[in-house]
Structure formats: structure tokens, C-alpha cells
Length: 290
Image 1 (cartoon, rainbow, N blue to C red):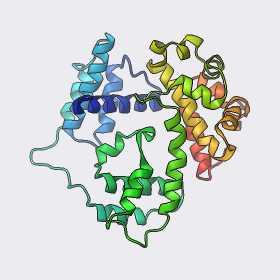
Image 2 (image 1 turned 60 degrees about the horizontal axis):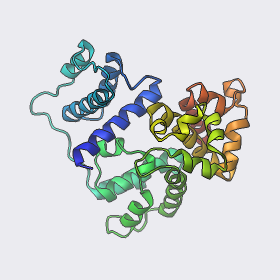
Image 3 (image 1 turned 90 degrees about the vertical axis):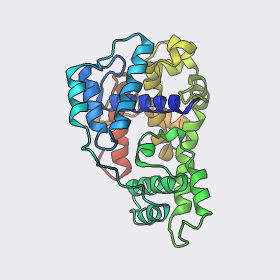
Image 4 (image 1 turned 60 degrees about the vertical axis):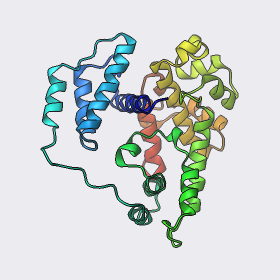
């Protein structure tokens, strides 16, 4: 795939993730949704990247036959207001040694391990801020990057916890990799196989029709992928303490959640509240209340 197409695909994926978190429709998107997304992105990327992200969103709308609100007043106003003054430049990318020192200063809690892993990945692969923001966890081969970094002179010998980070990174990504096709999409057949269930049972657990998980044209649709990804990411969070993907799936289907009126994760995902379940699990993982 040409580099330009890869960037467009990454930008579109980032927009879809943002829309899911905000519970907004990505395709077709309203002018207000696009304007709000660009305003959010402006906090971390420059005008060039914003224009590329806008073009990627427009390209997806064009391919799907939907009108795109690129000329809407809200979108134009955001782009106009976000122009950088002449002569303003971004600060240079931190060198690997500085990134490693920053990683060594991270706390040992879950958030600290996440930040430490990202900083080490940035140092090993020479990634910038925009590159890290565009990454999907299922696309990160973090163990390989960290191992390569450990063999370089950039990593101080006194740096603590690298082995634990490697083990955590491998554990976190294995299930996600096993359920993903080469295209990066969630493969319904792989997921059902790993959970020891049929595709029909998977469709019920996701609140989808049987055709949605059995016909290739339907499996790749944004709606189906969003629902399957919710299941995969929830199971990936739960399996760490449940013991296996199968036990995590049993939790997903049957465990009442007090914070949601004793609804199960399955019922919440079917209502389109998968992101709320994932935030709930993340809060518990760092010691929050259920």
C-alpha cells in the first residue's frame, strides 16, 4: 500500500475511534462532528496534518457515496481559526536518550507502565507525537521494539521494569493479534474459534444478525467492526484476571455490573455502550470503584 494511502487509512481509523468515544456517527458525519474532531486534533497536530485528516474523511465519504460537509461554515471556521502564525514551528522531536530518561521517571502503576511503554516505543522506532496518536494497539509489535531498544546504547543499564513491560506488552497484544485479519479488521471466524463458539452465537453476543458475521461484505462494515471490536477489547481487559478468553467471554455474557443497574457487558454493548464498559474496566484496573 502506498504511503499516502496508509496515512489516509490511519487518519480515517483515528476519526472512527474518536466518533465511537463521543458516540457520534462517522459515516456519514455531520459538519458539527467534523468541526469538533478537527478542533480536538488541533491540540496535538499542525495545519498540514489537519488538512490531511480532513481529506481522508472526505475520501471515505466520497467512496461510500455520501455528501461531505467540507464547505460547511463550521468546518471552515475551525480551519481558519487554527492557522498557525507565520514563522511558528513545532519544537524538535526529543532524542532517544531524553525519551528513555522520561520513561525511567514514569510511575509503576498501570498508567505509568503505559506511558513508559509508549516512550520506549517512540525512542526505539523514532516515532513522533503524531505517529503515536495514530497507532492502534493491535498494530503495535511492542515487544520487538522494546527488545531492540534494550540492545542499544540508548537504554541505561539501570532502567527498571523493562522485562515486566515486555511481558505485559506481549500479553496485551497476543489476543488482539489473534483476532485480527491481515487487513487490521476483526475476523469473526478467528474470534468465534478463540472463544469456542459458533458464528451464530457470536452474532447473538454482539447484537448482530447472522449475516453480519458470516458474509464477508457485511463483516467489514463499520457497524459490524465497531461491535466486534468492543467485544474483543472488553474480553482482552477481562481475560487478564478471568484466566482465559473463554472465561472472560462468560463474564461478558453473564456478570451483572452494579454501576450499570446490574446490566451485563453484553447488554450494554448491544445498546452501543461498549466504550462505557471499557472505561469502567479501566477504572477498576487502576484501583477505582466498580
